[in-house]
Amino acid sequence: MAFIITVAQQKGGAGKTTLAANLAAAWSGQLRVALLDIDPQRSLSRWYGLRTKAAKAHGAVHLSEVAGWRLAAELDRLRKSHDIVIIDSPPQIATDAKLAIRGADLVLVPMQPSMPDLWAAEGTLALALEEKRPVRVMLNRAAASGSLRAKVEAALAASGAACLASSLGNRVGFANAFALGLGVSETAPKSLAAQELAAVVAEIETIRERA
Image 1 (cartoon, helix red, strand yellow):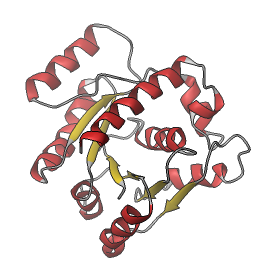
Image 2: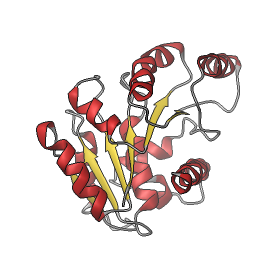
Image 3: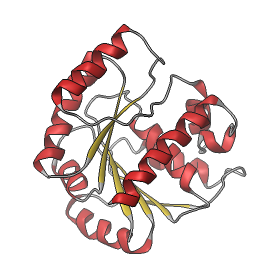
């Protein structure tokens, strides 16, 4: 049975789709990975289209775009046939987003270390709490340290939100890999970006093993 990760964030530009793609690429070749793109922008689907032609892809990834009233049934089908299912959810807390969070084994909320991102994440965090789903915030495009990051981390801790210990920096490698339909673990496996991603993947694997 698959471990379902719903990547959710209401604020645009938080790196939601890029994170979903990089996680899928990191696990491909090792596990049976499926992507479910229910974001109306369909950026993840366009990445997948590039990936089908990419020679450097480590492994196959399945893509589904089923949404609406068929979403719950599609999740059940993918859960039975894959090891990991990653959902790129819409930015609005609408019916599809609620169903994606309700069906998740882990809700992953990427956010830049800024107060607007923090405020935008509040609705997603509240919905995950309401649905009683495990949730983790992941700082994205983050400096290694700094007063703003410290302030945001303190605010998250005060709110009781659980955060991944690992974070992703503002690395051009993520965008470059995405433009090729690949993940940074495939285009630059020895880079700092790939090391950061590997730490995030390892942390999620620990959560998965305990689920």
